[in-house]
Amino acid sequence: MDQKCEWKDVISRSIQYDFYHTWYYHSLDRSGEPILIIYELEGDFISFPFVIRSKNSSDRYLSSVYGYTGPLSNKNFQDWDIDVLKDFDREFLEFLKAGEFSTVTARLHPFMDQVLLLENLGGEFKEGKSVAIDLSTSIEQQRKGYQEGHRRDIEKLRRKGYYLKEGSPEDIDSFISIYWENMKRIGADEVYLFDTQYFVDFMASDDFDVKLFFVIADGQPVCASLVTLTDGIIQGYLIGTRQEYLAESPAKFLLDQVTVIGRNLGMKYFNLGGGLNFDEDKLFHWKSGFSRLYLSSDKWTFTPSSAT
Image (cartoon, rainbow, N blue to C red):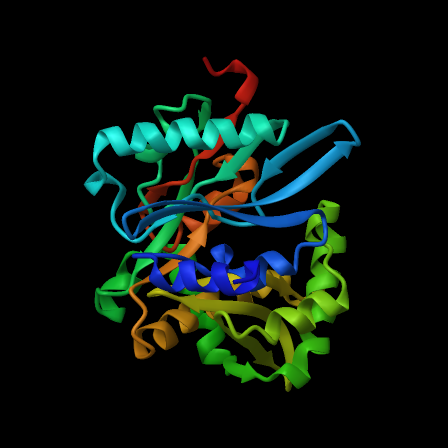
């Protein structure tokens, strides 16, 4: 079985996963070589996706793709026998040392209890927070939880006739135009400046569901987002707003309307993510204006040579 087939098989048998874990999403990352590490015991498994990257010919390291990944399993980590988890630690460490990987970094998923698997290995956990909206509540209750400014801005745009429209793959150029304008305006890191082919390929995924949404005002798209729906979690993967409409805050309207669609599609949570570099910055506080449901979103860094 080749890596692609095995990867897809393991993901399909995992008790929980997100689109960030899939083979297809990893295949879009051109910065290194995707790898899925698998530990198996009597039909049960633990898997851990990474990208092998290199600083130079003698310094290879493992790190996550952009987003929330971390280890997966076909059962909850707390249900694994402690002696088996210790055996996983030994096998994982041997793999890292045999591959001469200098460091390992992973951004853990806020909806998955992955720390339990990694804490005995050691390493450093940088704590962060991710904001989520619970879609099991009523839409009325959800909106009561918005900050007053968010609620007021959303209602103002509704009265002005703003509306949400679902796009198709043929509309990807409109999204790209808005997204690139947004990223250049804020001076975004190069890691966020995906090329056209990346967006086309992302929309073409058969490993996870992707939808494209636009906020329409004055007959034109003024805000847009690529939205993923995986295993009960909906996420605004990438989002952008036209410069001349920033003051209107159409992104708030978009997120509010996406929660309605998420409910209709049976989603349980809308993961808004956190701030940049795990900080409780302006972006984090903007997101927390939609919900006070905060989940842990840690970054794990491990140096194999420091393990005994």
